Structures are given as structure tokens and as C-alpha cells.
Image (cartoon, rainbow, N blue to C red; front, side, top):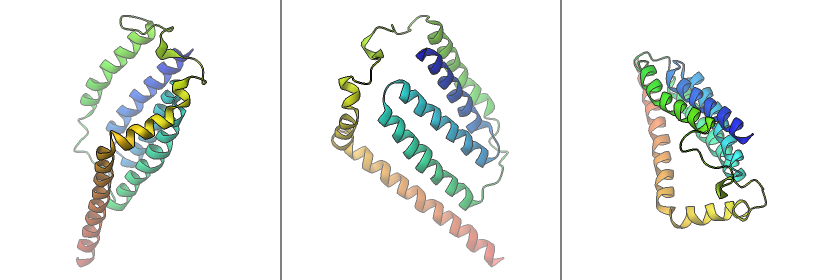
Length: 175
């Protein structure tokens, strides 16, 4: 049964990822990105990583997507026809993913055995109970520097968007 859910989530992630690249309206593209984020959270739930699913929804669907929409609305981005030869690029990327999903769902070569330890079926596993603690320890010890660099990159991006928006507003008022 989990393979059926995996197939659904993987297919929807591949489809909505193609729509993010292919849609001409940036708001529709952002809505496709939102649907993709929720399906990635669904994959985390299948893997019994409920904390990561909640973080996926709160951080990515809640914060990052809202920040993206804020920048799109602030810059007043309209439809852009320059970059829509990307259907071919999206198809080239998604077709191998689709083939891989079909091979995995059909139980072909490289499919993981259902009885292996990576497919534990109970929420009472020691790994599931310690999931949040392990993520916290790893994030704030091993990956502390990349975590701080990512926060600085987001800060610089937000300041850059505000500077670009202010420049557009000031140029429009002088005319």
C-alpha cells in the first residue's frame, strides 16, 4: 500500500515540478510549487518522519513560498516569454525520473525489499522517537556553519529584492 502512495506522491511531485518551470504566470508557478511542497511532506509522512513533514509545510510552504510571492508581488513581475523554451529541459529532467518511478513501482531491478530494516512499519521505533533530537544535534553541531550561511543568503536576497523594488518605484516617479 505504501508503494501506491509513493507512486502518487512521486508522480505529483514530478508533474508539479514541471508546471513550476513551464507556467508563464509567476503566481500560478508559485501555486504549483505549493502543491509540490505538500506532496514532498506526504513522502516524509510515508517514511515516518512526521517532524520533517511538519517542517516541510511550515518552513517551505509557509515561509519560503510566502517570501517568494512577496518578492514577485513587490517587483510586479508580469508574464515573461523569454524563458519558455524550458519545456524541453523540464521534459529531459522529468522523463528519467518517471522511468525510475515506474521501475521502482513495478518491483524491477534495484527495488528495495519490503522486509529490510529501512521499511519499519511502526511509529514506536527508536529511530522515529529520536528523530527530532538527532536532527537538532546534527544541525547545530555538524552543519552549524552551512545553516548560518543559508540564513545570510536569505537575508541578502531579501535586501536585494527590496533595493530592486525601491529602484523601480523611484524610477517610475521621476517620469
